Length: 294
Length: 310
Image (cartoon, rainbow over all chains, first blue to last red; front, top):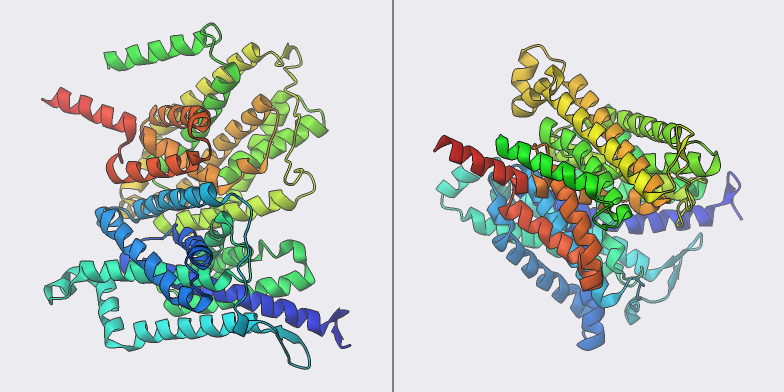
């Protein structure tokens, strides 16, 4: 068996694939955080809670409504997105024009409420979600064995991220969105319904989090705390990529996942902190983030 | 002003009489420790305008340092608290140097991330006891003569520490240094143009606040006899923000009132509603941000000012 520094290549590749799977979730989540921040100036602390909500919604709809994985992948983000729109209309909207820190604090409170409720209903122990029939099994690539579901997660996340990037940076709708981040008042004077745009974008960002939640349900234990520490990693990813930069969030999400996977091979103890060290390093060298403009 | 003096007098009399009133002294000590934590935090948020989302790192870091020295090395309370404060100040310096490169929302996110880094270090370090934390930390004897095992004696020691810190924060805010901090908070560009080295002031404020938060954390370890992971967790950072906000940011007494409300709420609510406490805390957070941004003391002070003007 081939080895590098005494570590079998298959083990390294396996960890890198796991890292890429994690990176896919980071990318999806930080994409949503970047969209919401870019357009509304709100750092959405509740993102991790919506991610957990997505996973639980998938679990519940399977157990009680008999909704399968594929239906959940479409229906759950829609439902959670609607909840996000309601949240924006009822609460967040009142804070526009105030210091952005209030948005962070408000969504922190919302995250506590959501996670507290999930904890009350489901307890602290994790539950598992079955891998859908069509995606079970493994691919034998010759040099390594790749579980199909992991390949699927990477494929779907990267496609979704690229699609979102294209939509925002290369289409007329995206142009309107970016105009709203630059000068909302002027855009409104041109007859665009900016408040509606904001509601929809918050809903879309939250729906992405729920989508990531459903996608992750078969590979992790679904538990109320699954989002609360993840959201901090996602924040660090967004800072590394450069706040408000869509492409920066996607790329740094994937690379942080890979770097974490690699750290697991060479020095496992540091794998949970490497992202924060990376963030500190980026801040020292390039305070605006890798792709950020300042 | 006469009303304020009366209020302080009544509170002082109450604080002195706590052991006579039959209030559980450990509960009061815990309340005072969190009040100190919130005052330290307010020095940063209220008077310097920086929202740190990672103050649990300093509180908990000092709690671990003090706990380890007192339990494993047999240090006395004075020395172990001093060491805890030192650890917190040093951690604050390291975090501060990186975090003050950015402002506002970025600052909050960076402190949050760096505090999470410290949380993981505490989780994996060999001397913190992992998931169990450090248990059975002895209180020792103050200056080697006053045994603090008695709750009453310990209570008065904590009360003295609280007053000392309260007066210190007051003094810092009223000093020329404190006025520069407020000037930076109000208009940073103006402060720069007046020739102040803004980043040095901000860093010093950060380190001071971290050290004082560490003082509170060290004391808490000796009071309760343990230091655990929940001391360094992000929820603790959130709690201290809530205390400060609820009581009134940028007021002297606000954080104390906020800490009293939150600690009392946690103590009595957990018996009433059990696990729903987190939900209640979250809801209070939301309500506070939406409708009560001046906080309790801030609102009262504003009423007084309006009455004075009318």
